[in-house]
Image (tube, rainbow over all chains, first blue to last red; front, side):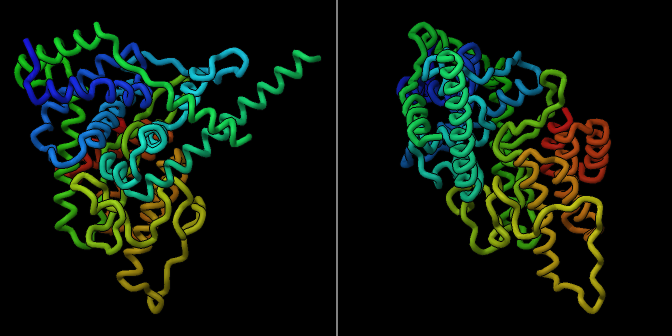
Length: 169
Length: 246
């Protein structure tokens, strides 16, 4: 059994990309395969509406956002087991893992805009279009996400200083 | 906090590139093939069904907004509000798109986002402040005190009245986005007092259900939701209202 040719092309070329997006949108490894499955079902159903003259990645990002959002809704509703991450300790956690955990603490909408703008390099109008939110909302969420992350990072720094002082005492 | 720390954080996040292992890649393709071969393409793919429904309703909503020139359309984009219990506390979670209806006025000049695509939300051309940021120009929401009704001789123009309505509804929407459901409820109460026969009652009703649910007032939210469905059985917001009290 094989995928329809048009879907197979998207799958082969962009699976890594949507996998990364789902990760950055907060879908954990445990559930990512299932969520990616549903994402590609949506891609399959909507591919005929996609304008091939346009770049496909923003369009895929819009679908990834919605599927991740639906996943989050279920998780919040208790339909999917959830655990709250603890604020990581600077001295105990690898920097990358720590960064990912900080991202996890952002509200979902801010996180999504932050990921698309700062990590994936999309423009605000692209994000506005694909997430179906007003442009000023995109800018606002990005600003708030940056602020949140700066505050979280500052908290980590302060904790780390406290740990160092205790260790030096 | 130093800027360096934030930059380090960004570098780590950018470098954190994950990819599916080969066995997952193969297995997922197989599962997908089976799902699509099974028929409608939705068997075992209920997240997909939900998203497809959303995408469909967004298209319908955009079409509806294009023919309404003065009425505020409340756009429930890929949005949702879920009330969930975490650690025994009832929490309000923004889960997708805009958590609150996005108040938009079809036909307003100066839309920023709506022009770029059929699925894009339409933003207000007036009174527009950052949706996630501060509230627009109506100032802080003060609970409990009804604004003094304007004397007949000072009755605002129709346009001023609509503007005022939009401001209040946007306050409610903004408060919901900022996870301050009580502020949203206060703004909605002010709207109800000031505009009891508003043509935007449907939008207000949908926001009320979401705000009550977000505030943890589940019973009231459910009652309001039932009343909303009875009053507006064909509303484009019914699914969102249901989702809020699910």
